Image (cartoon, rainbow, N blue to C red; front, side):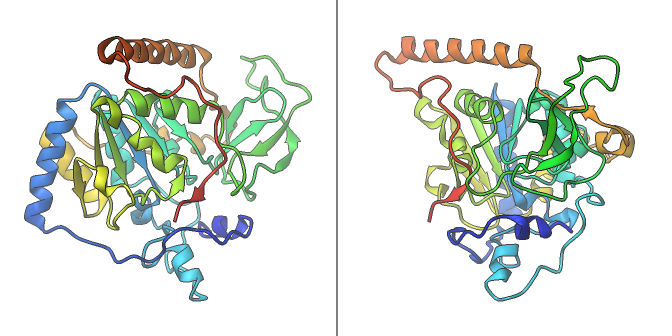
Length: 337
């Protein structure tokens, strides 16, 4: 079951602020704000969306810090009523809308803290996704570092060895690793964020003229601070969440309602049809290992674009301080309280 993932993590006391009451904008306000969001997106050249547990609750996967979240109820000795298995969970309207927005060129990149694999199941391309906390359906070889999609969710967390060899070469199209052993990719509290996902997320977030957060209180660092990386160069931040976040004061726009409602209205306003989930497009339903590794050409191309972006900023703004290129990935996910 999905909440068993949280039980598999190492004991950790500092899980952030829990159980803050949810806030709902009125229907009129939501309508007005969604129109503002549609304008911001259509006027932007590089849009990055940051997703958290709140976009998966309508799939039956509980969040962590909401009024009925895993950790909120844990303090009361209770468990969430929502608890679908990761294998059975299907992408929500939000996941499918994001897929459509990427395919139509309105969103350039998605950074997710979620380990549930629903972006993967939606059919989203690896080149458009950074999974900064891992993925229950992805295993990685300790030797060659290739990643593979599994037909079932991992039973372990914390990058534990799976006990069977690397799957490279089995399709006949790639070189065999021979001696590598696979491990799960889901991070525990003290694990380093994965390379190159963190670096790609950082570069995209810094280059974005619009960062949008969906369903996250932004309490986990460093991922929760990525949406702020564009602010010093005039970029905008939009926060969509039912609970207040620690970065609300930096937001250009805040929308407080369910993300499914926001994405439904947004896509209608800009004329994008939201596709239905299809098992035929879900790589976890192939019942065989498929490679999920990032293309080196994709990485090198973005590094070049990022360097050009930073050089242009220095030229235009002279003494403007910008982040150093390619900082080392930080430790995973401690809450800032």
